[in-house]
Amino acid sequence: KQEVTQIPAALSVPEGENLVLNCSFTDSAIYNLQWFRQDPGKGLTSLLLIQSSQREQTSGRLNASLDKSSGRSTLYIAASQPGDSATYLCAVTSSNTGKLIFGQGTTLQVKP
Amino acid sequence: DGGITQSPKYLFRKEGQNVTLSCEQNLNHDAMYWYRQDPGQGLRLIYYSQIVNDFQKGDIAEGYSVSREKKESFPLTVTSAQKNPTAFYLCASGVAGAETQYFGPGTRLLVL
Image 1 (cartoon, rainbow over the protein chains, first blue to last red):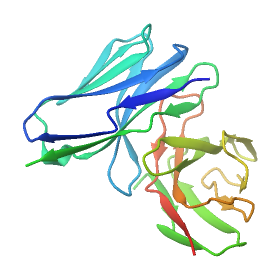
Image 2: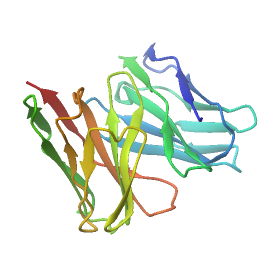
Image 3: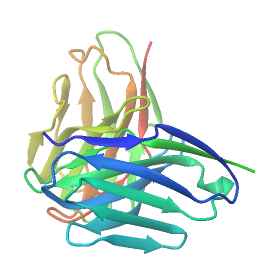
Image 4: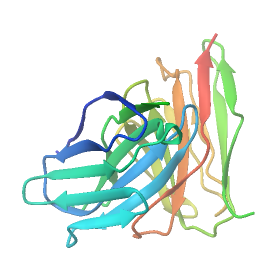
């Protein structure tokens, strides 16, 4: 059974710092991996989607990498800003079931 | 505006009562999904529908029911059989078999 784990559960950094969020998954049979952002009490917004054949995707200050063989992904946020404060969720699409399987999220606080 | 809407934003349930959460989308998506999110946890799939008049159980369907009479609508009923209904409920839609899902703003269900 696919399991997705995110470390750390919470992170607090000063503004301007570069940071890395980690995601690991137990089964390499995936179609893709996505990173979502969730603001408190809100829905999810897709940030980046990496196909299983890709190694990384970039959008602005965000860069996500995927190492399918080792079951790991990282989300790199450059020059963090207070507006980046949110919960970041990692999810994989299982190629066995077609379903999205989520990690528990990392809650990020960027202090001014 | 195209999008996915959920109502109400907050819902209170009395013991033994059934309550229904609304989810509507005007994105012309075939697939719709219901997820449950508990504090500090990722999303878990309750039910999903790939096409009108058809739906399948997700990982935690017990105590819930759905219908899909129209393409635009996928209401979720939390029945009295669900003993721990307090959670944040998220609806999503997408093109069946496609890569990503689009999420609504969520409904928070509380028990009186």
